[in-house]
Each structure stands twice: as structure tokens, then as C-alpha cells.
Image 1 (cartoon, rainbow, N blue to C red):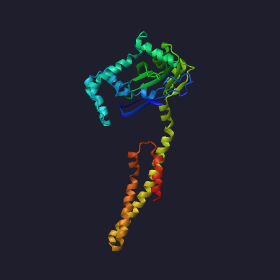
Image 2 (image 1 turned 90 degrees about the vertical axis):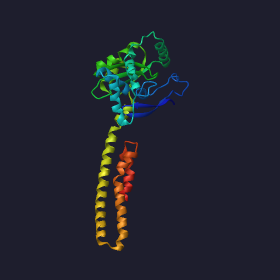
Image 3 (image 1 turned 60 degrees about the vertical axis):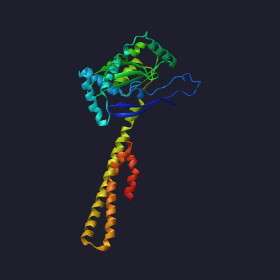
Image 4 (image 1 turned 45 degrees about the vertical axis):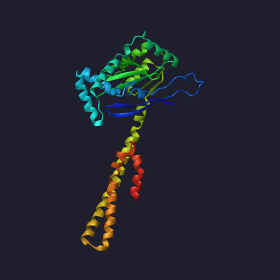
Length: 311
């Protein structure tokens, strides 16, 4: 395995540090040992050589063409969305609208174009194409731009902006790829039902794999829900014990202060330390959430909370 690239991609959700890796079969006797496999998920984040992500490019196109905003107004709206992420975009970056227009023209490249012919030669060397289907929606309720790529070469095959994702529309989106007449080695997409049906009807004998990113994200949902409920249960159990102990210690402290006995001074200091310890324990979930990069914080909190409970 070797890295294809390492860069920062700015998206509407924040800045991402992306290491784009690929691999080849290490067996030199394998007939596909010269074929390089790319990350479809990394390709879907941004266009080659672009710092701003595809979601920003598509939002610019939507604001310009669908809402008929001027480029100055588009820039203002984008900056408002990026400010909470502590990111900026300059007025000169509105050239991204041209990139959006290029995406929509992607399917119209003539077959006699020299670049197109060079790409076909790469496809023949690879034995065909692996189709990657990715739908990007800048804002919920807006149209979705579907991008179809060759996952082996990274080339964009076609793009179309649609307001519906029905099976027949998905087949229409994929029709330029069918017209290329190239061998299809496999298809990668998310688990959207209409995409599955469209691919099954167009290429019934071709392997179709759900995108690993989406697959693993969906697979993690049950354990994530269990982790969240476990975290709440632990917080409630420990929290109740801490509250009970804090109240008890507070009563002892008030009693000792009222008595004012000299011999009770050491005891009051110990009770104050215990009270501060309990206060610190009650903030453990918030502190851990701030410093932990893992979403499974309930699992990570089990050991610290067991130690706190034992204390």
C-alpha cells in the first residue's frame, strides 16, 4: 500500500486531513498486478487539486443557478456557514462555480478527444472500470448532484443534478456509462434501494459492493445506541451516589462548623477534600467527552467510573 496524496480538504462540516491511499496486488504473477485501486471515499470528497470539498462546490452552483444569487451573495452565505467551523473563504474562490459547471458538462466530452482516448487506453489496461456512485446534497431538501466515477482511474464519467432518486432516474444518470460500452468489473455505492435496483437492472451479473464507509457507519449504529444508553446509566448510578455522599459530607461540615471544636478541624479538612473529589467525579463525563476522539465514550468511561465507584 502506498499513499496517493495527503492534503487538507475544507468542507461545510469542517476541515478534514485526508490521506488518500491505494494499493496493488503484491503477487507479480497476478494478471491485475499493474492495476491500482483507489479510495472511492477520498475521491468523493474533493476534485483533484482542489482544497474546497465537493459539497461547497455544489452549494455554490445551487445558490447561483437555483436561487439566482450573485457571486457576492453566494460568497456571503458561504462565509456565514463556514464561520462556526472557524474557516474562511475568499471572494476570489468563487471560481468554484466554474468547477460546478464543468461537473455538469462532464458527460459531454467527445469520444475523439485525445485525453478521452488516453483514458480509454488505461481502462483497457485495467480490464474495465469499477463504477463509484456518489450523491451529494448541499442542504436537506435541495436537489442532489450524482457523480459517477471510475474508481480505478479516478475519472469522472458523468454528473447530473436531480430532484428525485427513483430507480428510472438512477438508470438515466447511469446511461452515459452504459453507452461507453466498457467492461464493468464492479460497482460501489451506498445502500440506497433505488441505486441497488438500478445497478441490478443495468448490470445484473456485476458484483455490487456497498461503500465501506457507509456500511461501517450503519453497522456501528446498534452498538453506538447501546454505548449511549450505557453511558447514561453509568452517569445516573454514579451521579446518584455522588449526590448522596456530597449531601452527607455537607451536613457533617455544617455540623463541625457549628460546634467549632478544635479537634474537628482535621475532620472538616478531610470532608472538604472528599467533597471536592466528588465534585471532580461528577464532571468526569464532560471532561472525557472534550478530550476523547472516540464516539464510544461509554466503553472508554467504564474503567474510570469503576475506579471512581470503588473509591
